[in-house]
Image (cartoon, rainbow over all chains, first blue to last red; front, side, top):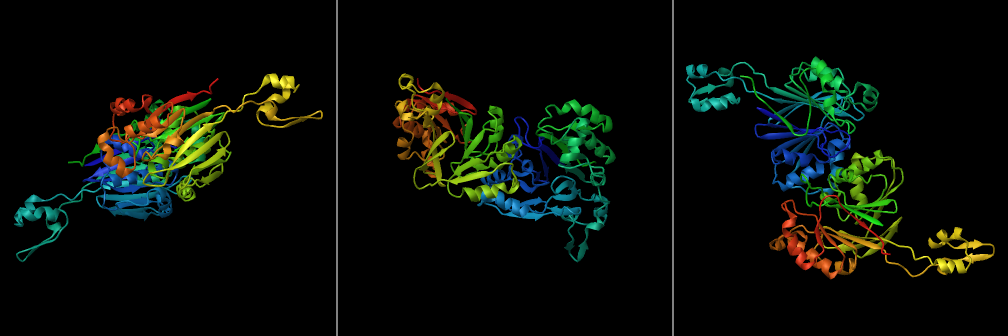
Amino acid sequence: MLDIALVGCGGSMPVPNRYLTSMMAAFNGSMMLIDCGEGTQVSLKMLKWGFKAIDIVAFTHYHGDHIIGFPGLLLTMGNSGRTAPLNVLGPPGLKNVVNGLRVICPELPFELNLIEISTDTPEHIRIGEFSISTLPVEHTLPCLAYKIEALRTKKFNREKAESLKIPMKFWNRLQKGEEIEFEDNVFTPDMVLGESRKGLQVCYCTDSRPINELVDFIKDSELFICEGMYGDDSNLDKALQNKHMLFSEAAMLAKEGTVDELWLTHYSPALACPEDYLEDARKIFSNTVTGQDRMIKKLMFSK
Amino acid sequence: MLDIALVGCGGSMPVPNRYLTSMMAAFNGSMMLIDCGEGTQVSLKMLKWGFKAIDIVAFTHYHGDHIIGFPGLLLTMGNSGRTAPLNVLGPPGLKNVVNGLRVICPELPFELNLIEISTDTPEHIRIGEFSISTLPVEHTLPCLAYKIEALRTKKFNREKAESLKIPMKFWNRLQKGEEIEFEDNVFTPDMVLGESRKGLQVCYCTDSRPINELVDFIKDSELFICEGMYGDDSNLDKALQNKHMLFSEAAMLAKEGTVDELWLTHYSPALACPEDYLEDARKIFSNTVTGQDRMIKKLMFSK
């Protein structure tokens, strides 16, 4: 199962009672954080998922509201006893940005593995438990949308394993893809594994205009976390100028991408009550939810 | 009058419901902020004193809990319409630190005037409305204590001005120190001004051990804002090792410095209830107060 938390739902600048937009995914004992604005680590403390298991921190882009909290998070992770390297992903310029911010935390008890990701073409990368895809999106700075996939192993065919007289002690290793040599026999995974099974898929897009490429990118995701900087359609001019989305634009993407559920986030500081515009968005995509700080969801593999 | 706010009272790292230690002084329409950790700008928003009038930002030292919020504050001040240069004070290394952090806010609508202050000897600097003194203190990094003085003009002797037949329209300019030539007469400030009058004085010290030099530095201040990382005297070993103070050590400084009032701040995240140790501190210095976020005080010139 894949646990998702919306760590914060604010945009532009930190304000009282709303943390900046960020999400955490937890899968098989490992965690991946996307974006880390000023105060994100405080909301993470309130979430109580801990800091030590964060193996990946990814950035959509380098506007302050998405990265200013990173040096403080690094210090807190150091204090939490982390020694394993931390993978850090982001658009080109990552090394420059991280090295700049590290002026106040030059010494850490763990290494940073900095991975710059193209903002020219979609990319795919596998890190530990997470299968990660990125899509360049349209903002005032080069910016990435992320897709996290929790892959599922193929179904194990117990009857076939028994008929082939494969000792039970090897079943788990075979399911994980290992080839086993035992008493002049060679057992291979394909002997006992069935069809591929659908994994779980969560997409995160902020900050961007609603570009067409997003529809394919988010296709059939269990959850789509998408910016909705403005609730009222009358703000279209601002959305166009600042390269953000209206609630209705995010809802249209969710509809066309046939996702299961849409969480709106990255609200303008001027948008005090996002719920005022929820019903309009639901007329476009019924399973729209206005995100709130530390909203969580547990996604389960289908039977 | 001099307005003082304790913007936050936490130490080491940001935690829920307690902002990091920082203070704001407001005098004659100008404001000076000391320290700016992660989240300080959010507490400033809650304080509602505005951002535009902040003319000076000073740093005690460059541990993350005292400076990580600075780039975000700069962005917010830019959004608030500031165009006047901002004075930024801190120990040597200021340019390197600020240039590093500005990697995510390279363009601002105002200039930064970076002023590095010695951590070898006490210094004094006058910036706009504020008369600022610094004292090198004893922490794990080079660190400064600050003294802010709101100076008071000398008393204007109305009877003397009348007897000298100085036109009333010049009185204000003479009080401000200007020399006036008028119809073959020269009027000088010393003709009409009396004795110097005591101003107002606020000191801020964090992070440090309670060094002797602090006693003279804070002498007779109206308010002494001082770190108390640990409430319980049994934490002396930690205080010595991490170069911080116990409540009792701060109270002893306040007593020996004969200040009017002591505000404790910069509590360890482990110190959930500072009030538990307040009575012990009051046995040493009775006018001790446990600082809280956004506690304010209005200091008035004596008659």
